[in-house]
Image 1 (tube, rainbow, N blue to C red):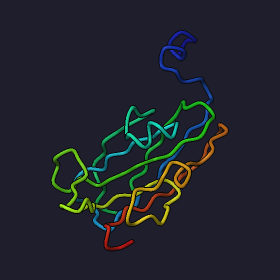
Image 2: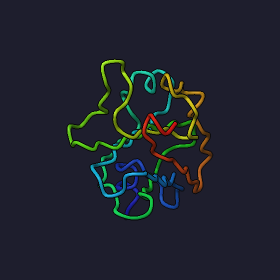
Image 3: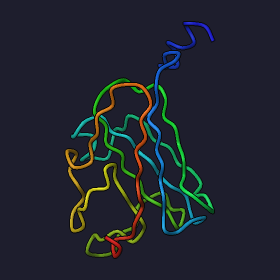
Length: 140
């Protein structure tokens, strides 16, 4: 590719990537919604995101996804498994999630969403992998 195309895509040749390995206890069901945030305000508001994607849940093994071209910085990942294909994380009347969810660094927050500092990791370029485990609220 030529230099103008690399600049337009926002990816530099040979740049590293953040690899996500997302495992779930409910393989083959629904879609996995993935969002990457680069600051606390966007993470808390759940928008705008640095990167987002919806992927099919694999029948076996973890979902593997590579995100190339992100600049060095601090990032947090939020993920949920949309079992009923309505495009949102379903909650009950008390606000308790009814579908599997997770965050980077797998924080142990149960009665509240984790804050940015609990989920954030540093990316200095190169290739790194974040392993994320989707769990239901009752599994936490």
